[in-house]
Image 1 (cartoon, one colour):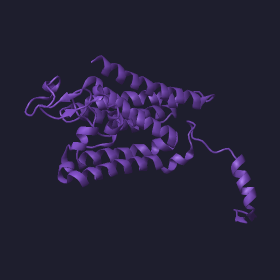
Image 2 (cartoon, helix red, strand yellow):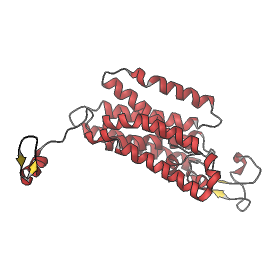
Image 3 (cartoon, rainbow, N blue to C red):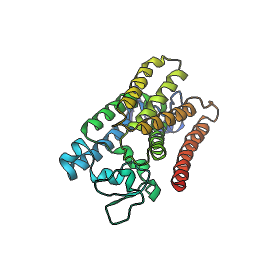
Amino acid sequence: MIVASVGHQCPECVAEGRRTQRPALTHFGGSQIGEQGYVTKILIGINVAIFALTLIFYAQQALFGSTPIHEWAAMLGQTFTEIPGQPREVYVGAVPGEGPIHYGLDGGAYYRLVTSMFLHYGVLHLAVNMFALWQIGRPLEAALGPARFLALYMISGIGGSVAVAVFSPFSLAAGASGAIFGLFAAFAIILRKLGRDVMAILPVIVLNLVLTFWFSAYISVAGHIGGLVTGAICGLGLAYAPKENRTLVQTLALGGTLLALVGIAVVVTLGR
C-alpha cells in the first residue's frame, strides 16, 4: 500500500490515477516541470563543461581568449586562407598553402550555427553569460515549460549566428549572448501577455543594447541583434497562439522561424 494524505491507497489505483489524470500545464501550454529549471541548469552545465574542455587542452590561452577550438567551431561566414600578418579581409581568395584554411558557412561548415553558441572567449565572457542565463532562464522556463523554452533558446542562438553570417561574415564570433538576447525579448512579450509590468525586463534589454554598441569592437552586434529579433518572433508565436490548437500553432511558428533562418543561411552562403 502507498501512504496517502488520508489513509492508504493500493499501487494499482495510484498508477491508474496517474494515467487518467490530465497533467497540469502552464499558461502557454507547457509542462509545469519547467518550474524546476532543469533545462536552464543543463544548458549552463554544457557551456561550463565545454569551457572546461578548452581549459584542459589550452589552459591559460582559454582563460582570456581564443583557442584552436574557437577557430574550428566559432561562428564564421566566409571561408578564407590565412596569410600571416595580413588583415582577415585579404585572406579571401588567397592561394592555398600560404596559411591554414578556415572553413566558414561558405565552405559548408553549417555546424558553426550551433557550436558557436556553446563557446566563450575567456572566463569573464562565460561568467557574464551564465549569470544572465541563470537569472532569465528559470522564470522563462517555468512560464513556457522545458520543451518550448529549449526550442526558444536554440532558435534564438541560431538566429544570432545567421545574423553574423549575413552582416559580419569575416568575424569569428562565439557565445550564448545571441540566445540570451532572444530570451530577453521573449520574456518581455510574455510579461506583456500576462498583463504584468514589462519594466522588469525593458531596462535590462536597453542596458545590454547600449553596452553592445558601446563595446562593438569586442562584442558581436549582429549576433546580439539577430538573437533579439529572433527571440521576439518566437516569443510572439508562443505567447499569442490561440488556445485552440495552441501547440500546433506554436510548433508552426517555431519551426517556420527555424526553416527561414536555415534558408537565409543557405541562400547567403551560396550567393557569395
